[in-house]
Each structure stands twice: as structure tokens, then as C-alpha cells.
Length: 516
Image (cartoon, rainbow, N blue to C red; front, side, top):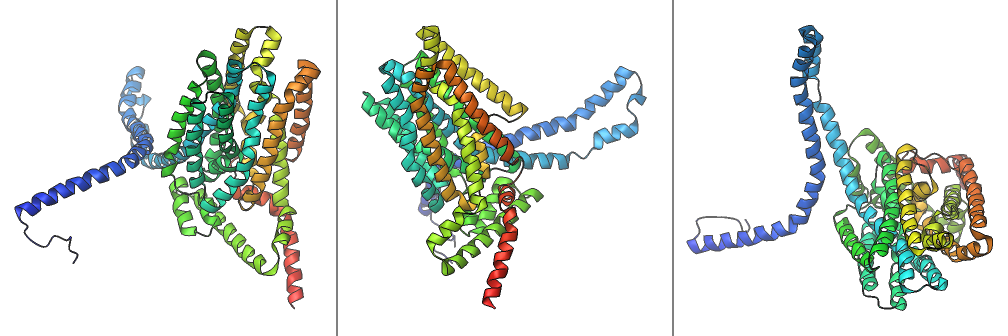
């Protein structure tokens, strides 16, 4: 028996001391568990609401039936048989399913909410230069430097973040990202010159680089297929909300107030401390029991969830076994060549590059960054330019919301969603950095070259250029892009490797013949 176990009658002093010690421990545990309690309250709040609706469901027939009979002035308006169906309908099972659905939805929303917050800060980061530069300097070269520095500053992090997320999981790099964003906006707020301002923008390169290497991975791996499309499209609209808020803040107040908003949002995103680790990453590293626990916590125990987990674990077991086999029979360089030549690697990568080209050459992003200068060139009025900028961004956000509801279409909404879904789990550590480097260089170059396009081709020529190039990329996507709606990541991956199955079988037969 341990020394701490109660074994008999204690003295009064011992009792008092024990009570004091217990009180101390109780308060310590309370303070430690307070954040968890708040999170549990956040999750259960949605369930409470459903239970309230369940109460409405049970209580409604008691008043509906008498009112219908009274209005019809006849008890036959609702027969006894019909009344029994209305009163005795088994809604408990429906309520239970609703409870499970809402609980899982809120758990996934809790994770994705942190990503949405960072996307809002990302929008602030992109929108800030549009109002900072007119307040500091009027020269066009300064504008180009700050707007294009984002893409180039992100390049190192495009290589670093995939390594961190592959080695330490998705949770740890996201927390590091939040802390770096906090520090970067502190520097942003206290900057006194354009040099310090550029330093803060360079520090935000990690935030820019995370867009295509970490944030998309978190959203796709933590969410169910039924919710993934909603979360991804909302993510895109939240980004442009950030751009609009940054423009509005810089228009009606000092630009440093943008840093205050970003700082608060970065603190809110630290809820990532309470995330579970990604089930996909755990499976990729052979930690299948932890993978199952995380998967069930996020996606529940229904049939679709069970099938998704089974396919995920089976696929990763086969992949791990294949990797071990190749380690002993081939060199690293040969494995790299095999990866590059694999259809499941290069086809999603090429499609994703086409999507990002459509995103950048649609002209919307360029117009957002240079909207003040463009509108001022048309109207010859700076105040009108600021007003027009806010109106255009508001129309963008409203149109994106309508697009989310009606058809989930548009290059600004689905660009990041598509490549986040297409990229197979096993190739993400290599394909996402490649895609991110391509995208950031393309974005920075487009922003850098755009002022010269507007200068030499005028506005009508520039818009014609963007329209033609965007149409070409849209046609290519229409022809080659597969449908990914309501499909698991494993099902999408199987689409690209399906045609290789016959090749794999023939290779295995050849190996067996050589052994014989």
C-alpha cells in the first residue's frame, strides 16, 4: 500500500494540513483544466442547441394537433391513428444522429477555425501594402517592392515547412507559424521606417509560404469529405475578408492598426495547442493506433468513417512495406526518378500548376494589390480611388459567398482547394514544395511585371491579356481536371494510380520470373 493511501485516524493538524493541500491541488487542477473546459463548452454548445431543438420537436405535437382540430372544427382532421404517428414518432434515433453529426462538425470546425484565423491574417498581410504605401511613399518602385517581397520571402519557408511537417507532424509547425506571425506583427506595429517595415514583411514570409505547404494540408487531412468542400471555400472567402479589412482599416485610420487586428487573430489561432495530431500523418509514420484514435475523435464511428480509416491504414501499410523493400534493392537517385515518372505524382502536380496559373492570371489578385493606383488613374481622384477599392473588395467577397452557395466555382474560390485535394499523401513532402515554389515565383513575378503591363498596354490591353490567358488555363482544366466532390483523399489518389495497376502487375511478374 502506498504511503499516500489513507490508513487510519489522523490528528487534527494532519487533517487541516491535508485539507489545505487538497485545496491547493484543486485550484491548480482547475487552472490547468480551464482552457480545456472552455473548449469542451465550445463543442458542447452546439450539442445543447440541438437538444433544445429536440425538445421543440417533442413538444410541438402537443399543441399542433389541438390547433389543427380546432381550426377544422373536427376531430377527424387529425385521426387517432395519425395523431399516434405524430406523437410517437421515434425521433430519438434522429436526434442521436444529429448529435453525432454536429459534434463531429464542431470538432472539425474547431481545428479549421484556427486555420481560418491564419488565413484572415494572411489576407491582412496581402492587403496592407495597398494602403501602407500611399501613406508612406508615393513612388511606384516602393509599391512594387513591398507587394512583391511577399512571394520572394516565402521561398525559404516553402522548403522548410514541408520538412517540419513531415518530421514533427502538422500541429507543431502550425504553432510555430502562429508564434512567428505574432512576432512579425509586433515588428510591423513598431516599425518607424520602410526598412523595418520590409523586415516585418520578410518575417511574414513564413505565413505566405504556409498557404500551400501547411494550411491546405491541415484542412484536407482533418476534415471529412462531406465538410471539406465547405471548409475550403470558406477559407478562400476569409482570405479576401482579411484583404478588405486591411484596406478599410488603412483607409479610415493609421495603417499600424492593421497589426493590432493581426496580433489578436494570431493569439486566437493558438487554439492549435489543443488539436489532435493529423490521422494521415500518424498513419504515414506507422502509428496506426494513434491514427485510429485521432480519426475517430474527428470523424466518428459511422460506416463512411470506418471505410476511410481502413483504406488509409491499408494504403500506408502497403506504402511503408514498399519503401522498405526499395531501400534494400535500389538507390536513392533511382527512387527519385521513379517518383517523378509516377503518374500519381506528375499529373496532380501539372494540374495544380495549371490551377495556380489560372489563379494568378485571372487578374483579380493584381487588381486587388494595385486597385488604388488603377482607380486613381481612371477617376483622377484619390478619395474616389479609396472608395472604389473598398467597393470592389466588398463586391468580390459578396460574389464569392454567392459562388460558395450556388455552385462552388471560380478561380479565387477553388484554386487552393483543388491542389489541396489532388496531391496524394505519400508525395506531399515533394510535390507541395515544388508547387509552392512555382506559385510564389509566379505570383511575385506577376505582381512585379503588372505595372509595366498597365503602362505599355493601357488598362484595356492589360485586361485583354489577363482574359485570354485565364481562358486558356480554364479550358485545360475543363478538359483534364477530375471531379473530387465528396470523395476521400484516398479515392482521389486511386484515380491517378488506377491506370498504373496493370503496369505494376506486369513488373511484379517480371520480378518473379527473374527470381525463378
